[in-house]
Each structure stands twice: as structure tokens, then as C-alpha cells.
Image 1 (cartoon, one colour):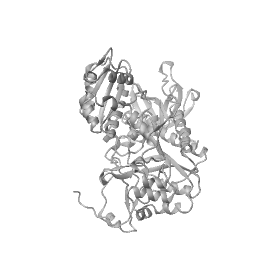
Image 2: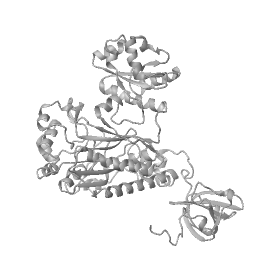
Image 3: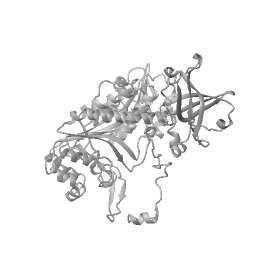
Image 4: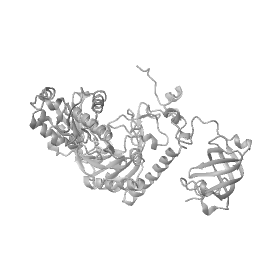
Length: 589
């Protein structure tokens, strides 16, 4: 490591210890906290590396005027603290500096919020003064940990034999499933670049160019509605490999990602197995293609139990194509009525259901549903729920029932304390549908996931089979209910590629125009290849225990409206700037 010694400091604020007692040192940093004890003034001096306590003579008016977060330089002697004053919470807690001289390098104005402590501050204020927010211990530590994790990932990929490449940020627009950010061209009138949603085509072209194994810590951009776990710009560990099958790609993920967790969350309990779950099974048993495997609750299809029963609401809905999903709540039979009522409110307000039917299996089955079912049907449901449990029911069409049951499963897992936040459970979700109905085009087939994935079908089957029954050779890696990776085998056959895009409504000339580089390259010898990308922001957030708050692991994030309050973007530009790029602003409707 390069020495930190300079004219401003001989040591950092995090490295002095008892072995330095008696030395005269110079430190520089921010005034983290001041404590005035009359004849003595104590300053906690902070830099990137830690905190050191400084002891100065009290009563100095000039020093009294130094505000918190001012940058000062201190020279003094390292002395040992009294045993009763040792602070074992910081590495420098055994010593302090007896100041001999000090100098203000820059004096801070009154702060808009405190850096010291855990003062609750609005997101708007934090983002406006992000440089102050980044000085706060938790966030500062998170950003440094993100830096270390990215280095670890980069070193790991090099160790595994991958070559690191950089791909263009100004490229052509392509359908990736979200809106692209467009950049107007000054030199080419009326034409636009697009910021990449992912370096998909470039990394495939690198495989066609014979580089065999590629990776990149890639910036990606998507102009879509924001959530707590989604950013306009984000980073991913992107990789691609030649001459591989799906297990070869997934083996890289199983080598890299659990290793990252072990390195940076040593207290974590990592589930040893990484199961493979088909998309259809995931939607049935977990109600989500991002199942949280820490939650032991499994959803069951009980449509046949209610078919033809005296519980008319469900029986009639089933005759009209509905299904019924059952979600057990273990050890909940003794819950008060208010607990069930609150779940009913949640189902109505949050899930959009007409209500929430349930049976309580205590000494005997209880509830309105139980009164409408015969003993045989009740026993089938009892086997699903278990003793001393409740069983909740969702009745709707297949898609809505799955999603509502999945959200209820997650809520029950959290409310019943079934999920340990420091457990880490991975799974692979495989065999995604290749196409899905596009409501805007009257239910015509559209790509479900990645349009460049390989279909699990022959060219003939693509022409004859129901497109909605065709699966894709693609997968997601899920960690604790978060999609942290998406990937699969790529479509490297130009005839298959043409047919897939034709099914999705793209004529041949559109394919040749929009994907000309890839389509042309396929004609000159493309290896079987595939790859994936791991979301770095989500990974870092989950490992650090920040959950969905990915903004807490990004140095300069936009807010949930896509605004950078610190830099003031997006902002207006001058008329001349617009003329240079041939743009005229239309009035908003």
C-alpha cells in the first residue's frame, strides 16, 4: 500500500495503538465530535480509516469556534489512556493524542444535519447533501465494502480464467424488455445513440470473435419506473462463455456468489444446497419466480378439493376457470381473532382480493369454510396444514392466484418469524416460458425474458407448437427472494433466431436492421455460448443487511423520482445546446 505520510499527516486516524505511545505524530481529518469538559476539550478526529481522540486545553476561543466537520490538523504526543477510559469499540481506543499544536485547514458552516450519530434525516435532505451523508459511519462503511466486494469479484473472475473487456456505452437501441435512454447525435441529424440496458450483443460478439471467456463489471441503464430495489443506472457482473451448457454457466455462479457471501458476511448461515426449481413449480409452490427459500411455507393447489363442494363461492369460480391455492400458517391456531382480521384487511387492500377464507385446525376444524366441507375434504386440507395451524385460501385465475398466494406466503413467513435475516438461501429457477401474451397486441406472443436466449425447441417445433408452451434455456439465480442473476444459453443459429423474432412479431427485415451485427456474425461461424449477469447493487445490499435499499450501497444514487438532488439532474439546457443536436421540445400534453 502507498504510504499515507505527507506534509499534512504522519499517520491515519485509524492506525495508532499502544505501540505508538511516546511518539509525536501529526494527524489530519474531520472534527467528528467535540466534548468540552472545562479545562479540557476532547475532539474525535475522523478520516477514512478511523477515529482518534485528541485532548486539547480548554478555554481557547478560536478552537471553540471550530464547527463539527471542519477539517483540522493536529500535532501531538501519543499517550496511553487510563484503564477506565479505554474504548474497546475502536482500534485506537487504548490511546489518545495530547495536542501540542493545531491548525484549521477548512472550517465548516452549520450542518444541515448531524454526521455524528443516527439522526433521522429525510431522504431529500440526505441526497441534496450526499457528500455529508457519505461521511456517516454506516453509509461510509457500506460504500467501502462495496469497493472491496467488486475487487474480490474481479480477482475471482481473473482466477477462473476469464478475460476482462469494456464494451461501448454509446450504442444502438435494441429491445431488452425496458425503455432505453436515448442520446441524440450532433453529427448525424435525426439519429440517436442508446445507453446499454446490458452489454448483451457485444459480449456475444466477443464469443464469436473467439475470446472464449469474457467478464465485465458493467454499467447498465434502464429508463423505467423506480422502486427501492431498482435504479436507473446500475452495475452487474456480466460474463459469457463459449462451448458450454447450462450447468457449466451455473457452476461459475455457485463458485463465485456463495464465496462472496462467505468472505463478506462471515456470520451468515449459508444453506449448503442450491436447488433447481422450474418456473412452473416456483409459481405453484412459492407463488413467485423469485422464491425465498428460507421460508418453509409451501403453497398447494387445492382446486379439486373445492370442486363441486358446498362452498359455493369457490365451487362456482372453479367452474368458470378459477383455481384455489392454499397457504398454511404453522403454529397459528391459537392466534387471536384480530390477527386473522388484519390478514383479511391485507388481502383486501394490498392483494386486491374480495376477502380471505381460512380454516383453523385446532382441536377441531373451525371457520366458515370448514362448515361447508365434508370430512373427506377437510382431512385432505388438514394434511396440508398440519396440526395447530391455519390454512388460508386464494381463489382467482392462475396468474393472479399465484401472485396473491406468493405475497401472502411472504407475509406469513415474516409475521410468524419463520425467516432469519442472516440466513442466505440460494436457488436456481429454470425453464422459463420463452413467450408471453402481449396485451397491447391483443395477446400476440412477445419475449418473456431475454430475446437472445435459445429456445428449447427445434426449428420445426417453433413452426408447429403453441408458442406459449415453448421454454427457454435460461435461468435466474435467486437469493433470499431477490433475483440476483439472469442468464442462459444464447441463440447462435441465424435460422432459429429469425423464427423466434418472427413469432414475436418482428419481420425479417426488422431483424436484419435492428440486430444486423449479431445476425451477420452468426453467418460466419458462431460457437455455442451462454452467460449471465449478477446484480452487484442487490448483492451488496443483501450481504450488508440493507435488504431492498440498494441506494444505501451506491455513492451517488438518484431518488425514487429519478432525480439527482446533489447535481440537479435532470436539468434544462440552453436553446443553443438543443439546436446543436437538432432537438425541439414539444409541449407536454
